[in-house]
Length: 324
Length: 82
Ligand SMILES: Cc1cc2nc3c(=O)[nH]c(=O)nc-3n(C[C@H](O)[C@H](O)[C@H](O)COP(=O)(O)OP(=O)(O)OC[C@H]3O[C@@H](n4cnc5c(N)ncnc54)[C@H](O)[C@@H]3O)c2cc1C
Picture 1 (cartoon, each protein chain N blue to C red):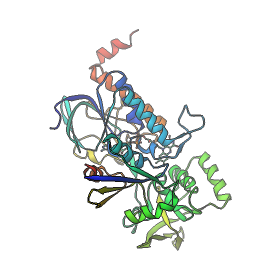
Picture 2 (picture 1 turned 180 degrees about the horizontal axis):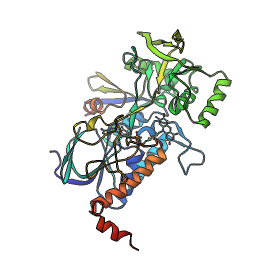
Picture 3 (picture 1 turned 45 degrees about the vertical axis):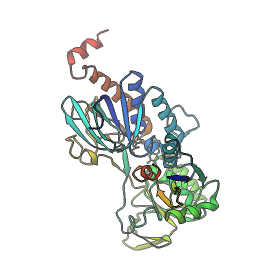
Picture 4 (picture 1 turned 90 degrees about the vertical axis):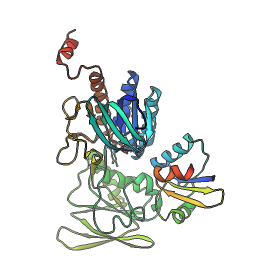
C-alpha cells in the first residue's frame, strides 16, 4: 500500500465528465484525487474546434477548453495524478484502486474513462501504426502537408477530422462502409469540400488491407459493395470507425457492463456496486457529447456528495430533505 | 544525467502539451521545435523517431547518448529524464 489515507473520492480519467465532477466536489471540500493515463481533457483535448459546447458563441479549441476545465478543477483543490488505474476492488466500506503509482483507497469512485478509437483489424494496420496509420488528426495531420490521405469511417468523427485534415492534405479519399452517418450540419460542411474537389467520398467501400514498405504506407486495398477490389494510392491513413469503452481495467471488479462493454448505472449514475459511480461516454446510454459528459459529471458529483453524507441509500433522510 | 531535452511538437497536439507540462512540473528545461512553424524540420523528427507523429522527445545525456521517446509515454519518459 503506497498511501494509507482514504480519499473521499477518486476519479478515474480526466476528461470533461471527470473535471466537471471534480469542480463540483472540490468546491464542497470533498477531497478528490483524479488519475489520468493520457491527456488531461480527454477526447475533448484532441479535438480541434468544438462548435457545440454552450457558452462559446464562436466555438472553442479543444485544447483551450481542456485547459480551462483543468485550471477550474485545480483552483478548488482537485489533485490530478498522471497515472493509470489498473484495477479496482470493492472492500466493502472502502474501495481499493490499483494504480501505476501503487494502491490508493477511496470511499467512493467515479469512473469517467470515456472511450478509445476502434481499430479496423485489417492487415497492415498495426504494422504501420504511426508510420502511416493514425487515429489522431490533431497530433499527426501536420506530417501530411501536400500529401494524399485516406480516411476510413463515416460518422461525426470521420467527417470532422477529414475536414480538419484538408488543412494539410492535397486530397482525401473518405472510405465509408455503408452511408455517411454524420450530423446534417457536418454533412453540409462536407459537401463544400466535395464540391471543391478536396474530399472524395466512396460509399459502400470497406478496407481489406493497408499496404506499404519501409518508407511507410502507399496504398489501401478495399472492396466495394459489388465485391470488386478497389485500390487507393495514399501517403497515409486515418481511422475513425467509432469508439469502444475504456472498461477493460474493470474486468475483475464485478462492475456490471452492458453487452458492448459500457457501464450500467441507475438513475443516480451509481453502478451495481454501492459507492462506485460512472459518468460520460463510458456509461451505457451516454450521448457522447462534451456537454452531456459535463452534465453527467455534475450529476454524479452531487450524488456522490449524498452518498458520502449517508443520504443516497437512506430514503428516510432523503425524504425529509425534499420537504420545504 | 540529462544534458538537454528537445521536443518536436505541433500547435494542435494535446499529447505534446502533456510532455511539456510533465517536464515543467519536474523543473526541467527543454527546447521546443514546433513543426507547424518549422515544417522543414519534419524530416528530422521523422528520422529521429522513425514515426510520423508528435510529440517526439529527444533526451541527450551528458555522455551525448540520446534517448528518443515517441508519443506521450510516461513509462519511457519518466526514467529517461530522472
Ligand atoms: C474526433 C472527435 C471529435 C469530437 N467532437 C465533438 C464535438 O465537436 N462536440 C462534442 O460535444 N463532442 C465531441 N466529441 C465527443 C467528446 O469528445 C466526448 O463526448 C467527451 O470527450 C467525453 O468526455 P468523457 O469525460 O466522458 O471521456 P473522455 O473525454 O474520453 O476522457 C476520458 C479520459 O479517461 C482516461 N482514462 C481511460 N482509462 C483510464 C484509466 N484506466 N486510468 C486513468 N485514466 C484513464 C482517458 O485517457 C481519457 O483522457 C468528439 C469526439 C471525437 C473522437
